[in-house]
Structures are given as C-alpha cells and as structure tokens.
Length: 93
Image 1 (cartoon, one colour):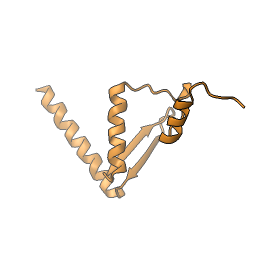
Image 2: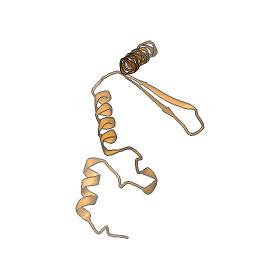
Image 3: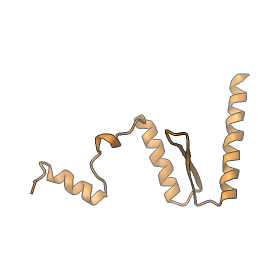
Image 4: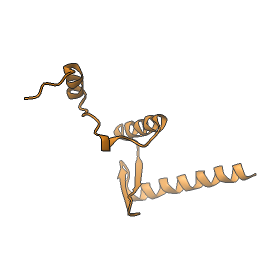
C-alpha cells in the first residue's frame, strides 16, 4: 500500500469531494473565466434557469436546459441574441 506524502491534502480532498487534477483535466480557461463559470454553476444550483451549450471538436453541439422548459430556453437564447445585437450596434456607432 502506498502512503501519500501529504495526508492533510488527501483528507481535505476527501472532505471537499474533490479529486486531484489530472494532466488531461487542466483547464484552458483563464482564472477569471474559471471564477465566472463557477459563479454561473452556483446560480444554476440555486435554481436559476440556464441553457448550457458546448460545441465538440466534431462540431456537434451538446446542450442542457436546467430549471427551464424548452420554450423558456428558446426565449432565453432570444434575449441573448437581442442583447448581443444591441451591444454590437452601440459599439459600431
């Protein structure tokens, strides 16, 4: 049996429910993006409606509606499109 060198770190991981980060699990996101993503996930966990969309390497989309019906999700995507268009129009002036 192998004994870990830092038993305190092992115990903290067990208590926090986290695991060591494998080389392949490292994030390509900047620290501020990681923090923002964590805040969004926290909001979803507290019941906020969400649409999560990820494009895989083969250009296939994976998506999830959380705390929202498909109709609510489409309405949220419309709001994003409208707000983005407004910001682009304002910056082009």
